[in-house]
Amino acid sequence: MDTSRTSMIKFNSLATEDNNDNSKRMVCNRMLLRTTECMNTSVLDCAVTFTCDKNVCVYGIQVPAQIPMDEDRQRQIVYPELLYAHLLDAEGSRLTYTHFTSRVNYRSLIEISFNRPVYIQKNKVYKVGVVLNKIGWYPIGTYPNVSSCNGVTFSFSQGQGGEGGGVRDGLIRSIIFSMPPIVSPINNNPGISGISGDHNMQPSII
Image (cartoon, rainbow, N blue to C red; front, side):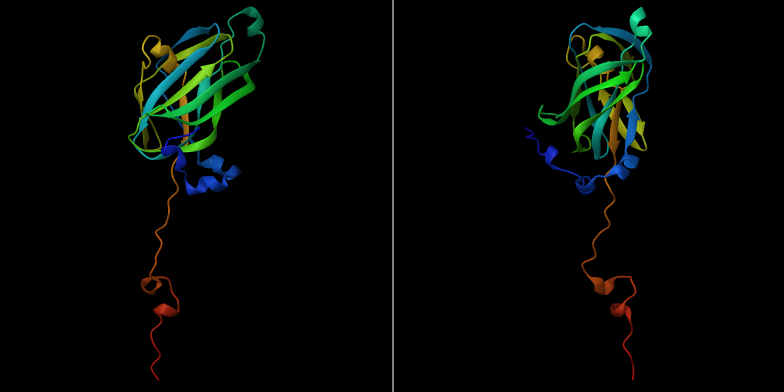
């Protein structure tokens, strides 16, 4: 159950989402400095903590797909991926989540959309977590601590969670988000409006 106050705040535009909303989404890609490979032998838990310098709405994340290492898999193009992802606030309350099951291409980026988008507040701490359930090799990235997209800056805390934290952080490649809509101020005094109308007409002199 979502208990955080943050999870209750939504953009007005989210109430009537449609296909046109996709054009508003942006992807903050963490710049890849280098990669290594990690073998998932059972369940691989990965997470990254971040803050943002603006109020934004988070829709999902991107994680890398598996790398085919053996000869049988190298002849294949796709494989069935199975994972779980969530977004937490600083107190650990779950704001949104999703279960992802789909056939994906090897060596691709998997776009994961949360069950519902969540409004997050600037300069507050949040955590994205992913649990991978498919046995196989995954590319682990090393990134700078700061990434920017369209004037929005995300700051990431690497190496969270003690031993193995770097591995957990390196599997989350991007954050999918949007900016809040611009709301025009409401003029409650039409008598001083600049819009032409009867209230702006000079009185007739007879």
